[in-house]
Image 1: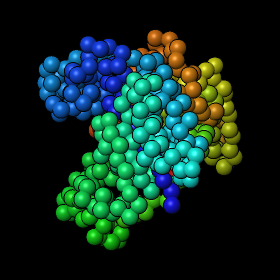
Image 2 (image 1 turned 180 degrees about the vertical axis):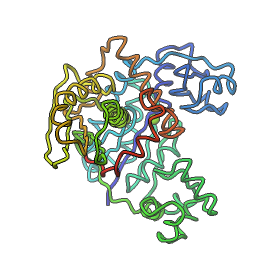
Image 3 (image 1 turned 135 degrees about the horizontal axis):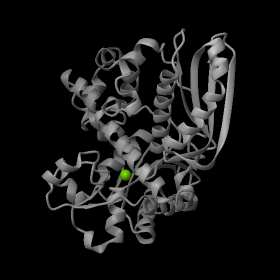
Length: 399
Ligand SMILES: [Mg+2]
């Protein structure tokens, strides 16, 4: 039997602002003016949500104080919190800048019960970093994450062994990990509103509603089947993506558009995971199935699209004679030598760099909320239909 904690800072960016400026405490605070990157609980009470447009948010909450994001302060706060998490358990898996899983199985004799560990952690984060953190305790990762969300704000919720389904089944389906607005709508239209409704359907029946892959996942989660372990070492060491191209020649502009889309996708995943990377790898497969891998190491680790794209463009340019001679059937990119932003690497960002990350984080937030198609880089505007026509099937992603 495993015991897993999911620890998640409450309204993280907004809480850091309230911590650092007493005048903001108890008041509705919005971080980010264009798109809301974070909203304090006082602002959420008016219906404001993160990723909401700034004008809509100010309409809902006219008395809100809008502050400019200070990413260096958030990275520093995150680093301090993770130092405490690392002290609390040997297995800590970072999910993002402000949340993590901790495996506390078998620590009882040394560190106390899971509830004592969680309570101490909450107190330490509050006293030493000055921030509220909510913690869910359960036997699976998924349930611990659902529990921490139920505990918010500033709470601790324990799902006792044997009580898992009693806790889970009354919840609305959108509370399950991975159920976004589109899936929720489909489930609701099929009359499935609660996790109990979900659990009453067979995986096969669900597959007609949400597709096979999602059906398998939702069916398992509804029965609290989640065998995923907390992974030491905080996740993967590289993040990549690739695209198979149809046969036939393509212009430089077309190849560049593919590269831009891949970089967007990979850097977005890096930012979501709170990772920066130092080495950029370009993988090409030519018309004769020969493959080549080229890489370059950057001066400093980044999750920003621009420096990664610039480097990949140079690498691609170097391969241009071979591409023209043999044709190109696949482009893959990978960023390796990943580090966590909490490692201190971005503590002293130059202004332009932090502005760029702010912009990109904003774009990520918008895409998360409204879907990947809602924002497209200028180079891709108008090219999407053509891309669909000349790109072959997408290869499965590789780590
Ligand atoms: Mg959070």
